[in-house]
Length: 338
Image (cartoon, rainbow, N blue to C red; front, side, top):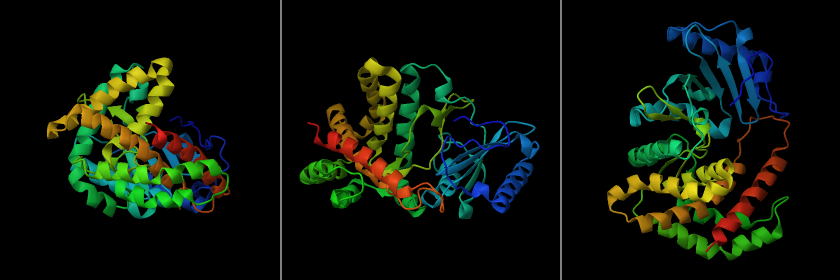
C-alpha cells in the first residue's frame, strides 16, 4: 500500500468519515501508539512525520521511529476481530505471520513493526509465488484444529454448510441486482447445495481463509520464510477458497499466460494436502468446487453490517449493491461452469 509521508491524510478519492476526523480519537490513538512504541524500546518521530491512509473500512498510519517503521491500523466493527486474531496467530502458527507490537482488541487497534520486503516488491514471475503458497497451505493445515476458536474470536463463519443455508438470501430482490442473476442463482441452488455437501464430506478440514491473499500481504522474513499479514477479510471456510483471490491476481498480473501460471501455482498450493492421502484428481475437483461456492461468501462480506466505520457519509447501500451485483455475476458464472 502507498502511504503519504505527511500529516495530511491520503483518502484515495473516498469521501468517508472515519474516526480519524475526530480530534479526541486521533490524539488517543496516536498517544497509544507512542506509548506502545516506547514500551517496545522505540522512539517515534514527531507526529508531523506520520503518514495516514483513510478508507471507509480502515485507518492506517505509518509511524517512523528511531529504528524500523511501525504501522498502526484501526478496524470498523465487522473486522474488529483482527487485533485479537493477529495476537493469537504467532502462538498458534509461529513463523507464519507477523507478530504485533501491541493490540487493543476492544477498540480494534493493532500496532505492527515493519514486515520488510513483500512479495509485491520482489521478482514479478510465477516462481516467486510457489514457496509462499505452499507455506500458506501449511499455515492452514496447522490452524485447522483451531476452527472453533477462530469463530470464537469473531471471524465470519463461511463453512460450506453455512453458504448452502444462506443461498436463498441471495435470490431476494436487492437494489441494482439484475433479475436474471437472481433467477440463474435460484435455478442453481440445488447443485450449489450438492457441491457444499461434497466439500463438507471431503475430509479436508475447515480452517482459516485469509480472504485477500495478494502479494502485498506476504512478506519475506530474514529466515527465508514468508509471513502472512492483514487479516481484516479473514473467515473460517473451506481452505481452497483462498485460491479465488490468488486466481484473480494471477490473471491480472500475467495476462494471456495467466491460466498456465495459475495451474502451476494451484498444483504447488495443493501439494501439501496430498499428505493426508487425497489424490491429486480429488484435490483438483475440490479446488474447483471451492472456487464455485466461494463467491457467495464474498457476497456476504460485501453485505456485512459494520463493514465500514459507523457514520460514514458513503452511501453504504449503494456500495453494497454494486459489490453485490459484481459478486453475484461472478458467482453465477462460476457456479454454472461445468
